[in-house]
Amino acid sequence: MHPKHTHLEGLRVVELAGVLAGPAVGMFFAELGAEVIKVENKRRGGDVTRTWKTPAEDPAEKDSAYYHAVNWGKQIEFRDLNDPDDLDSVVQLIDWADILLVNFKAGDAERYELDVPTLRNRFPRLIIGQITGFPDENRVAFDAVLQAETGLMSLNGAPDQGPMKLPVAFIDLFAAHQLKEGILLALFRRSTSNEGAHVKVSLFDSAIASLANQASVFLNTGVPSGRTGSLHPSIAPYGETFYCADGQHMLIACGSDAQFVALCSVLNRNDLTTDSRFKDNPSRVVHRQILQGELGSAFLLENSFELMEKLIRVGIPAGIVRDLPGVFSIPEARKLILEENRNGKSTKRVSTAVFQINPMPCSKAS
Image 1 (spheres, rainbow, N blue to C red):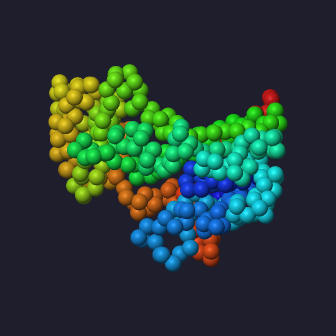
Image 2 (image 1 turned 60 degrees about the vertical axis):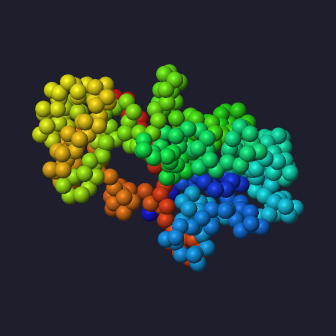
Image 3 (image 1 turned 180 degrees about the vertical axis):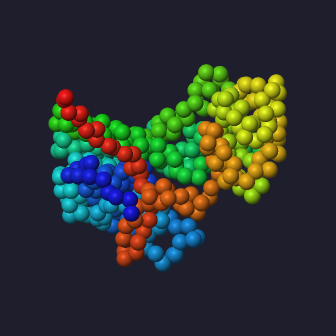
């Protein structure tokens, strides 16, 4: 089992957020040793993701694997904010908290008097982490809708297919990372000012920020990249996948001319390096389909795992396309699994805090 960290031991977090983004932030703090109390809607049976089960899951199980993914290490409390006594008990929890995580629907915070101005006035040292959806806060926001609205689906998928959603709710996770960073900065600021803060992140802004080089290409040229599958729009061969003799898929990501030359050498296709169509990266991008065919015939002569060893030795970025059973056969991946007993059953998920902080010992003066 992946060990719990103690970096934030003594920090107290109350989580009034549901689904993925807010709970991911709560679990992050739980992994770092904070005490995290997750308050779920008693009247509705708790976080809605408890019911989000795949066909592979036992319908009789109380909670879904989705729910387990971001709710490790938390104390769970069921409350109905429409009940005055339950609402009062939640306010008492907030009274001793350092951080409050919320993603209320528009109007709910004011109705329960848990809006930011009220909370800031009553709890001046409290750090409020808030996640919203669209700039129009009355609009219901789920990750898939944001992927459609912010361009990600238009970029994802093969050229001959329609727009495609990414298989993980990445916008929720991007927003969670943004909120973590803002909260950590607010904690640092509070250590000297003794003042709380309101840290607000929207799914929309997080999605736009994640467009990175794709946004930059469009903003500087006026031309969107469009769907290119796994291919990189401006590097070749980068993202191409090839069949090997043992039936495995392998992906290649050559980021420089030197890496391309080394790849050709390993595949015994040095002739490609003198072909004018492949002489440099811009030329390879223009002629990438022809290049893929030439390289593809060479990959078919190779065993994937033996070839992988050769490529690693000469520093060529490459990887075998693994399914999840293959991923979790890797010891380093298994080390990131967090286990927890819930409702009398062992549950598993992957860690969200995977960085390492190693203190640097002070050198003694000679």
